[in-house]
Length: 271
Ligand SMILES: Cc1cc2nc3c(=O)[nH]c(=O)nc-3n(C[C@H](O)[C@H](O)[C@H](O)COP(=O)(O)OP(=O)(O)OC[C@H]3O[C@@H](n4cnc5c(N)ncnc54)[C@H](O)[C@@H]3O)c2cc1C
Image (cartoon, rainbow, N blue to C red):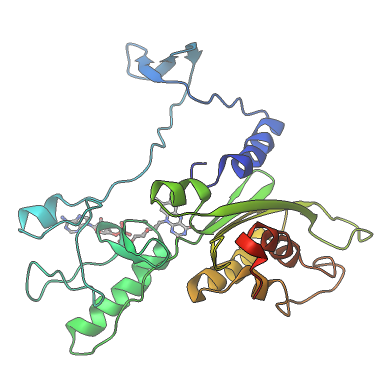
């Protein structure tokens, strides 16, 4: 779960272990061993040989650019096809690129990225199609919002993680809160963790991660809107978010997280 900071990924790890998954971290896969008929038999690793009936490789994604390169299209710094905001390929008049093969502008990093999601591909395809047929519309960029369901948890992220921010040379501060998904006395409440990554100078929200038994996947959209618009945690702290006991405490976990994050700001900047 490199898409989360380690502290948040640990919740996902524990949920996987709770259903019997053995998680081995920082272990090298050295060889996949097969029976004579080709079926997998085991996987050799740096901590020993593990028996295996099935082997699933899930090692990340890369843009498939062979066709684009063969056609003479320029790739950008991420290795994906470079485009402008209208999804035009600057290197070839009349050619457009969209989706997994193309770069997107990241609104927090202020740099091109290749984040392969259907949410980006659909919008970019629409932009490319509109411009290719005589219209004029621009794709405004991405903030890296993604959700998934892993074992008992909804897992969500937007903007940048602390690790991604450091890798990009951004100065950030982060804090995490633990809350309940419903009012404490309401049946069925479970844990939810919210981590906010902020600019410590002006308080802008630069990223958020949420892991919880319910309500994480759609709550992330509030944080995505804040990151998109440059909202500060001081503003978010007083957002008029909905409350009723089946859905949250009277202070939504996002508001609690924002209030805590204001303590991270240099000189107590609050807006
Ligand atoms: C298992 C899985 C789950 C996912 N879940 C989500 C999710 O929950 N949310 C989300 O936002 N995104 C999700 N994604 C990502 C999302 O599916 C992709 O980002 C999206 O489909 C990309 O669209 P695309 O049009 O760029 O590429 P694709 O959907 O891959 O379409 C490319 C098409 O081009 C065709 N093609 C390739 N080469 C050639 C050629 N030489 N000539 C002609 N045709 C060619 C391919 O056959 C394919 O049909 C998921 C992806 C996977 C694999």
